[in-house]
Length: 112
View 1: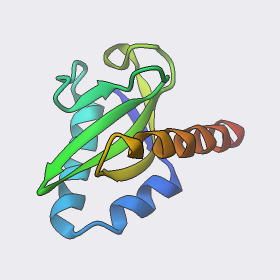
View 2 (view 1 turned 120 degrees about the horizontal axis):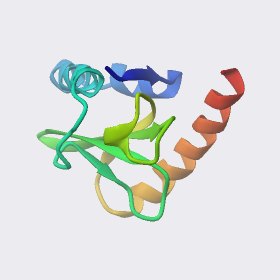
View 3 (view 1 turned 90 degrees about the vertical axis):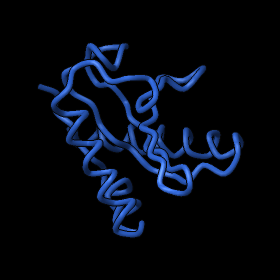
View 4 (view 1 turned 135 degrees about the vertical axis):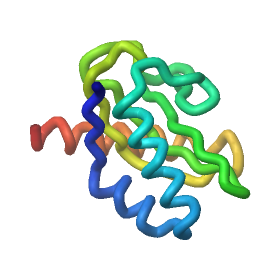
């Protein structure tokens, strides 16, 4: 139903997590691709940005920054790209993650 692309940076982040966390990420990526409407507990729009976050809880809180390619609303998009991941420790982590996501998005769009 929805095509999900994953950047090299995001794959590297997932691969560097312990197995339990990585399995949860892959399960959620599968859910993103198969289910049209995702509850905001799992995918939430980041305020003042064009990005969404995929939320994973496994002891700590992990996030993947996602960009909906073909629609402003994630639930309406048919293609999205996972740009990068980070472990949420404070709200300050978001600024750095969003800057990285912007850089990764530019690279991704150049390649496509």
